[in-house]
Amino acid sequence: MCDPIDKTNLCIDKIVDKKADDILFGTLKSKSGNIYKIENGVPILLNSRTQPVKTVDSFAYEWEQFDFDCGEKG
Image 1: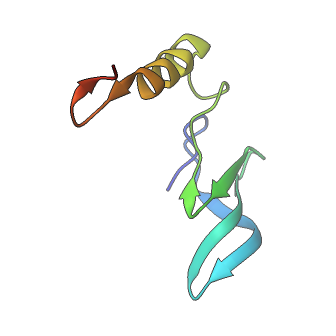
Image 2 (image 1 turned 60 degrees about the vertical axis):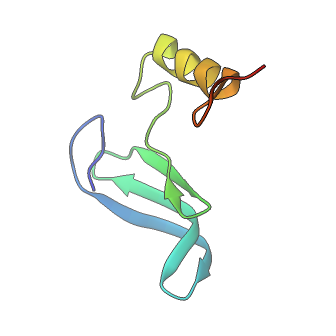
C-alpha cells in the first residue's frame, strides 16, 4: 500500500488495538512523514490533503442521501 500523496510505501506506525493478526485501530506512516489512521480495520487514505474538498463533500452528500441498494432515500 502506498501514500496517495507522495507514492512511497506506508508502514505501520502505531497499533492501538489488534485482534489476532488484524490491526483494528492505529496509524500508517509514509517515508515523508504523512500519517493515516486505521479505523475498524480500514486504512483511511482519503482526506482533505489527498482529495479536493469538493470531492469529499460530494461523496459525503451522496452517502447520506442515497440508499445504494434501492435508490434515493424517501
